[in-house]
Image (cartoon, rainbow, N blue to C red; front, side, top):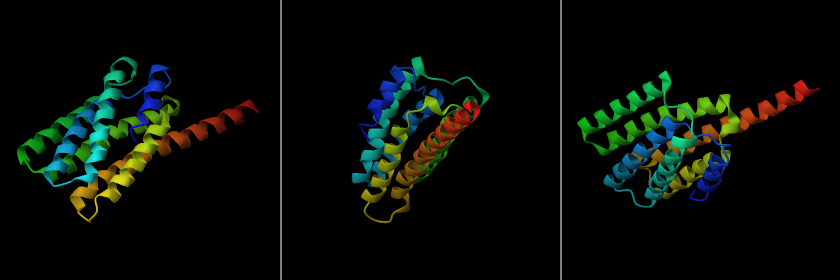
Length: 185
């Protein structure tokens, strides 16, 4: 998981990968919330995933300010409003489990922006980050140790959401290459 950020940063600096700014901003905020909500519910070994993810996403968000895309569309503002409302709801409830599920909802909204971008422009993502992150979600899920719906929710979500970004990039790249071959013939 930690190693997956290096190819992503390399590709950002090479102007190949263009992170979606709103996605990475929201990931930065949410990573912190998910880490502390799981800590409050007694997580231990499964805390590695949100901790490492938070450090990684803050770095990528900072790079996205110069090298990224998005941030000013209607969809971006809608997702930011959903995030703000979710954070407000979390503050009102003051319950760690509710905060975690709000984080997952907001995270899903942010991930949608990257999936949409990746569908249109699959070449603007470094797929290895998303694959490793999805695998990390699986390992974190296995590290929980017992069936506790609150503790398994976030790693399960990360596995599915980041796997969805990876699948979008891989399938769209395959489609685009096949389409180019058909046009060239």
